[in-house]
Length: 301
Image (cartoon, rainbow, N blue to C red; front, top):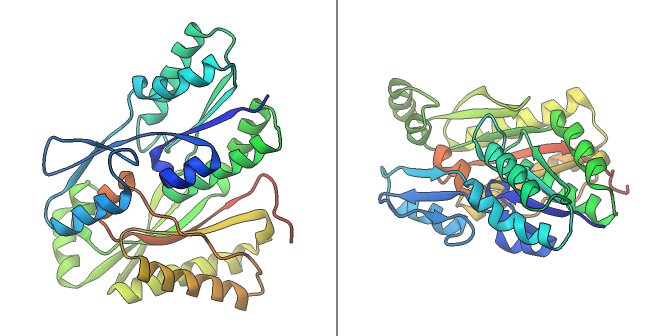
């Protein structure tokens, strides 16, 4: 019996891709300048929310995690149909969404004693969480057992690595990631942060002066990582993701995959992935980066 795949909306697959993959999304909530909270990817798309951010500089957004009841709304029909359930959540160090899902799964087992449910802390965020969700759908379609699939997905978590930057330090300051003095000085000097995510944590990867330099340094850091680790990229998912600027994303992604080709890697160009609201409240509308995570099932060369 195939398990059903659920994720919170921070996986950044978007509603259309999630529907195509047969993934059920549980929405985060987002607000901007009012007490009205929209459900991410239900009431409002990431692009629509980013545009509101861009149109209202200095107005900082807020998010709220899904509740236990939000998860149960999605879990109950799956359990009622008698299907196993695999739920993949945003890094538990960043949000209590994982705990909400665990609480919902426990209550679900009281209501449906025969249900089989696993909740997995992705230990990732944004597009890499989405890649874990996509890998889960591969295992589902191969008829893997629920526990075998969940164990395999947990085993690939340490491999994930993201390299990214953003354009506006004020969002990082507002979210408590940097201090006011750092944000003010950085803005005056047009300094952009370089950020890495690995080992389930965010890491300061340096700074660059100006947007073009920051994007170049992100690419350089990614290529240096590949030169150091020498992975077989048939065994990895390599993806890029962005905020609002699609043209900038396309140019960045072209350069990433042209660079991979020069290094001798023949990997398909990343699909377009929109970094969602859950992360965007901390980065503003201009995050852009590249990430990689090991596959459970290697791609055919």
